[in-house]
Length: 260
Image 1 (cartoon, one colour):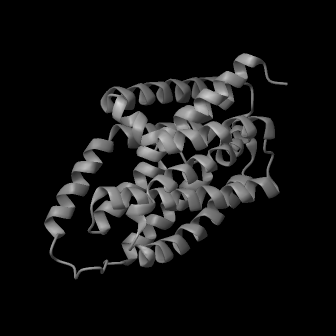
Image 2: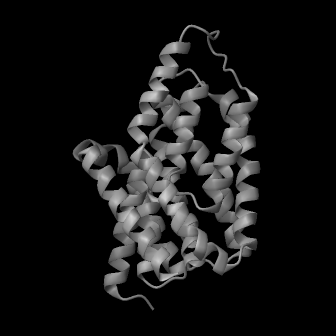
Protein backbone atom coordinates (compact mmCIF):
# COMPACT_ATOMS: atom_id res chain seq x y z
CA UNK A 1 0.00 0.00 0.00
CA UNK A 2 1.39 3.38 -0.98
CA UNK A 3 1.85 6.07 1.64
CA UNK A 4 0.39 9.57 1.05
CA UNK A 5 3.88 10.97 0.40
CA UNK A 6 4.51 8.27 -2.21
CA UNK A 7 1.18 9.00 -3.89
CA UNK A 8 2.06 12.70 -4.02
CA UNK A 9 5.49 11.87 -5.49
CA UNK A 10 4.00 9.73 -8.25
CA UNK A 11 1.29 12.28 -9.02
CA UNK A 12 3.81 15.10 -9.33
CA UNK A 13 6.19 12.98 -11.39
CA UNK A 14 3.38 12.02 -13.78
CA UNK A 15 2.39 15.66 -14.24
CA UNK A 16 5.93 16.80 -14.98
CA UNK A 17 6.74 13.82 -17.19
CA UNK A 18 3.60 14.38 -19.28
CA UNK A 19 4.49 18.03 -19.75
CA UNK A 20 8.14 17.38 -20.64
CA UNK A 21 7.22 14.62 -23.11
CA UNK A 22 4.68 16.86 -24.84
CA UNK A 23 7.21 19.63 -25.37
CA UNK A 24 10.48 17.86 -26.07
CA UNK A 25 10.94 14.40 -24.57
CA UNK A 26 12.80 12.96 -21.61
CA UNK A 27 9.85 12.82 -19.22
CA UNK A 28 10.70 9.25 -18.20
CA UNK A 29 13.81 10.62 -16.52
CA UNK A 30 11.36 12.09 -14.01
CA UNK A 31 8.70 9.39 -13.76
CA UNK A 32 10.90 6.27 -13.86
CA UNK A 33 13.08 7.32 -10.87
CA UNK A 34 9.92 8.22 -8.96
CA UNK A 35 8.65 4.66 -9.42
CA UNK A 36 12.01 3.34 -8.24
CA UNK A 37 11.86 5.65 -5.23
CA UNK A 38 8.59 4.14 -4.01
CA UNK A 39 10.16 0.68 -4.07
CA UNK A 40 9.29 -0.96 -7.40
CA UNK A 41 11.99 -3.14 -9.05
CA UNK A 42 13.54 -1.61 -12.18
CA UNK A 43 11.78 -3.88 -14.70
CA UNK A 44 8.40 -3.47 -13.01
CA UNK A 45 8.93 0.29 -12.77
CA UNK A 46 9.71 0.48 -16.48
CA UNK A 47 6.60 -1.36 -17.69
CA UNK A 48 4.41 0.52 -15.22
CA UNK A 49 5.92 3.78 -16.42
CA UNK A 50 5.12 2.95 -20.06
CA UNK A 51 1.47 2.25 -19.26
CA UNK A 52 1.09 5.27 -16.97
CA UNK A 53 2.53 7.82 -19.41
CA UNK A 54 0.46 6.78 -22.44
CA UNK A 55 -2.36 9.24 -21.58
CA UNK A 56 0.25 12.01 -21.42
CA UNK A 57 1.29 11.36 -25.02
CA UNK A 58 -2.39 11.40 -25.98
CA UNK A 59 -2.83 14.76 -24.29
CA UNK A 60 0.12 16.20 -26.16
CA UNK A 61 -1.19 14.91 -29.48
CA UNK A 62 -4.57 16.53 -28.82
CA UNK A 63 -2.84 19.85 -28.46
CA UNK A 64 -1.12 19.41 -31.84
CA UNK A 65 -4.15 18.40 -33.93
CA UNK A 66 -3.85 21.38 -36.28
CA UNK A 67 -0.17 20.75 -37.01
CA UNK A 68 -0.91 17.12 -37.93
CA UNK A 69 -3.19 18.14 -40.80
CA UNK A 70 -1.73 17.29 -44.20
CA UNK A 71 0.71 14.69 -42.82
CA UNK A 72 -1.38 11.59 -43.54
CA UNK A 73 1.22 10.00 -45.85
CA UNK A 74 3.98 10.46 -43.29
CA UNK A 75 1.81 9.16 -40.47
CA UNK A 76 0.91 5.98 -42.35
CA UNK A 77 4.46 5.22 -43.51
CA UNK A 78 6.31 6.07 -40.31
CA UNK A 79 3.48 4.72 -38.18
CA UNK A 80 3.83 1.26 -39.73
CA UNK A 81 7.62 1.29 -39.17
CA UNK A 82 7.15 2.53 -35.61
CA UNK A 83 4.54 -0.11 -34.80
CA UNK A 84 6.87 -2.91 -35.94
CA UNK A 85 9.75 -1.52 -33.91
CA UNK A 86 7.54 -1.06 -30.84
CA UNK A 87 6.38 -4.68 -30.90
CA UNK A 88 9.98 -5.88 -31.13
CA UNK A 89 11.14 -3.54 -28.37
CA UNK A 90 8.33 -4.57 -26.03
CA UNK A 91 9.01 -8.25 -26.74
CA UNK A 92 12.71 -7.80 -25.97
CA UNK A 93 11.89 -6.15 -22.66
CA UNK A 94 9.43 -8.85 -21.58
CA UNK A 95 11.84 -11.68 -22.39
CA UNK A 96 14.75 -9.90 -20.71
CA UNK A 97 15.58 -11.10 -17.23
CA UNK A 98 15.16 -8.65 -14.37
CA UNK A 99 18.87 -8.99 -13.64
CA UNK A 100 19.86 -8.06 -17.19
CA UNK A 101 17.54 -5.06 -17.26
CA UNK A 102 18.86 -3.83 -13.91
CA UNK A 103 22.42 -4.06 -15.29
CA UNK A 104 21.65 -2.20 -18.50
CA UNK A 105 19.22 0.44 -17.21
CA UNK A 106 21.90 2.80 -15.79
CA UNK A 107 23.48 3.00 -19.25
CA UNK A 108 20.09 3.59 -20.86
CA UNK A 109 19.56 6.45 -18.42
CA UNK A 110 22.99 7.87 -19.31
CA UNK A 111 22.06 7.61 -23.01
CA UNK A 112 18.84 9.51 -22.38
CA UNK A 113 20.73 12.16 -20.40
CA UNK A 114 23.21 12.49 -23.27
CA UNK A 115 20.38 13.00 -25.74
CA UNK A 116 18.87 15.66 -23.52
CA UNK A 117 22.24 17.38 -23.11
CA UNK A 118 22.73 17.38 -26.88
CA UNK A 119 19.19 18.57 -27.57
CA UNK A 120 20.13 22.13 -28.57
CA UNK A 121 23.00 20.91 -30.72
CA UNK A 122 20.72 18.38 -32.40
CA UNK A 123 18.16 21.14 -32.99
CA UNK A 124 20.87 23.27 -34.61
CA UNK A 125 21.91 20.34 -36.80
CA UNK A 126 18.29 19.84 -37.80
CA UNK A 127 17.90 23.53 -38.64
CA UNK A 128 21.11 23.62 -40.70
CA UNK A 129 20.10 20.48 -42.57
CA UNK A 130 16.65 21.91 -43.29
CA UNK A 131 18.06 25.19 -44.60
CA UNK A 132 20.41 23.28 -46.91
CA UNK A 133 17.55 21.20 -48.30
CA UNK A 134 14.71 23.71 -48.52
CA UNK A 135 13.57 24.05 -52.09
CA UNK A 136 15.10 20.72 -53.04
CA UNK A 137 11.97 18.62 -52.67
CA UNK A 138 8.66 19.02 -54.51
CA UNK A 139 5.86 20.48 -52.41
CA UNK A 140 4.06 17.85 -50.35
CA UNK A 141 6.68 15.17 -51.08
CA UNK A 142 9.21 13.70 -48.64
CA UNK A 143 12.40 11.77 -49.37
CA UNK A 144 11.26 8.62 -47.54
CA UNK A 145 14.61 6.91 -47.79
CA UNK A 146 15.87 3.69 -46.29
CA UNK A 147 17.99 5.58 -43.70
CA UNK A 148 14.87 7.38 -42.44
CA UNK A 149 12.95 4.13 -42.00
CA UNK A 150 15.93 2.34 -40.46
CA UNK A 151 16.55 5.15 -37.98
CA UNK A 152 12.88 5.34 -37.00
CA UNK A 153 12.68 1.55 -36.61
CA UNK A 154 15.64 1.57 -34.20
CA UNK A 155 14.18 4.53 -32.31
CA UNK A 156 10.88 2.67 -31.94
CA UNK A 157 12.65 -0.41 -30.54
CA UNK A 158 14.43 1.77 -28.00
CA UNK A 159 11.22 3.65 -27.24
CA UNK A 160 9.32 0.49 -26.35
CA UNK A 161 12.25 -1.11 -24.50
CA UNK A 162 13.03 1.88 -22.27
CA UNK A 163 11.80 5.11 -23.79
CA UNK A 164 13.55 7.94 -21.95
CA UNK A 165 14.79 10.47 -24.50
CA UNK A 166 13.14 8.78 -27.47
CA UNK A 167 11.19 11.95 -28.30
CA UNK A 168 14.42 13.93 -28.64
CA UNK A 169 15.88 11.13 -30.76
CA UNK A 170 12.87 11.04 -33.08
CA UNK A 171 12.64 14.81 -33.47
CA UNK A 172 16.27 14.84 -34.61
CA UNK A 173 15.61 11.97 -37.05
CA UNK A 174 12.52 13.61 -38.52
CA UNK A 175 14.20 16.99 -38.78
CA UNK A 176 17.21 15.61 -40.60
CA UNK A 177 15.27 13.57 -43.17
CA UNK A 178 12.07 15.61 -43.63
CA UNK A 179 11.69 19.19 -44.84
CA UNK A 180 9.12 20.98 -42.67
CA UNK A 181 8.86 23.40 -39.76
CA UNK A 182 9.68 22.18 -36.27
CA UNK A 183 6.15 22.59 -34.92
CA UNK A 184 4.74 20.16 -37.50
CA UNK A 185 7.62 17.75 -36.97
CA UNK A 186 7.14 17.97 -33.21
CA UNK A 187 3.46 17.13 -33.69
CA UNK A 188 4.44 14.12 -35.82
CA UNK A 189 6.98 13.08 -33.21
CA UNK A 190 4.29 13.25 -30.53
CA UNK A 191 1.88 11.08 -32.50
CA UNK A 192 4.58 8.49 -33.22
CA UNK A 193 5.54 8.54 -29.53
CA UNK A 194 1.90 7.88 -28.63
CA UNK A 195 1.79 4.95 -31.06
CA UNK A 196 5.04 3.41 -29.80
CA UNK A 197 4.18 3.85 -26.14
CA UNK A 198 0.60 2.69 -26.67
CA UNK A 199 1.66 -0.54 -28.38
CA UNK A 200 4.26 -1.18 -25.68
CA UNK A 201 1.65 -0.49 -22.99
CA UNK A 202 -0.81 -3.00 -24.46
CA UNK A 203 1.97 -5.61 -24.72
CA UNK A 204 3.00 -5.01 -21.11
CA UNK A 205 -0.59 -5.18 -19.86
CA UNK A 206 -0.92 -8.60 -21.48
CA UNK A 207 2.49 -10.08 -20.65
CA UNK A 208 4.22 -8.14 -17.85
CA UNK A 209 3.81 -7.13 -14.21
CA UNK A 210 2.05 -3.75 -14.23
CA UNK A 211 1.36 -2.02 -10.91
CA UNK A 212 -2.11 -0.60 -11.39
CA UNK A 213 -2.23 1.63 -8.33
CA UNK A 214 0.73 3.61 -9.66
CA UNK A 215 -0.79 3.63 -13.16
CA UNK A 216 -4.08 5.02 -11.84
CA UNK A 217 -2.27 7.88 -10.11
CA UNK A 218 0.17 8.78 -12.86
CA UNK A 219 -2.13 8.29 -15.85
CA UNK A 220 -4.45 11.08 -14.73
CA UNK A 221 -1.68 13.54 -13.96
CA UNK A 222 0.33 12.69 -17.08
CA UNK A 223 -2.75 13.37 -19.23
CA UNK A 224 -3.10 16.77 -17.59
CA UNK A 225 0.62 17.39 -17.96
CA UNK A 226 0.54 16.52 -21.65
CA UNK A 227 -2.22 19.03 -22.31
CA UNK A 228 -0.54 21.76 -20.27
CA UNK A 229 2.97 21.03 -21.47
CA UNK A 230 3.32 23.97 -23.82
CA UNK A 231 1.88 26.39 -21.24
CA UNK A 232 4.26 25.13 -18.56
CA UNK A 233 7.24 25.26 -20.90
CA UNK A 234 6.60 28.93 -21.65
CA UNK A 235 6.83 29.71 -17.93
CA UNK A 236 10.08 27.82 -17.33
CA UNK A 237 13.66 28.49 -18.32
CA UNK A 238 14.35 25.75 -20.86
CA UNK A 239 18.07 25.63 -20.16
CA UNK A 240 17.63 25.39 -16.39
CA UNK A 241 14.94 22.72 -16.71
CA UNK A 242 17.05 20.68 -19.13
CA UNK A 243 20.12 20.64 -16.89
CA UNK A 244 18.09 19.95 -13.77
CA UNK A 245 16.57 16.87 -15.39
CA UNK A 246 20.02 15.79 -16.69
CA UNK A 247 21.61 16.15 -13.26
CA UNK A 248 18.76 14.19 -11.70
CA UNK A 249 19.03 11.46 -14.32
CA UNK A 250 22.81 11.13 -13.97
CA UNK A 251 22.44 10.88 -10.18
CA UNK A 252 19.84 8.12 -10.55
CA UNK A 253 21.99 6.29 -13.11
CA UNK A 254 25.07 6.45 -10.88
CA UNK A 255 23.08 5.27 -7.88
CA UNK A 256 21.74 2.27 -9.81
CA UNK A 257 25.16 1.51 -11.28
CA UNK A 258 26.92 1.60 -7.90
CA UNK A 259 24.13 -0.34 -6.20
CA UNK A 260 24.53 -3.10 -8.79
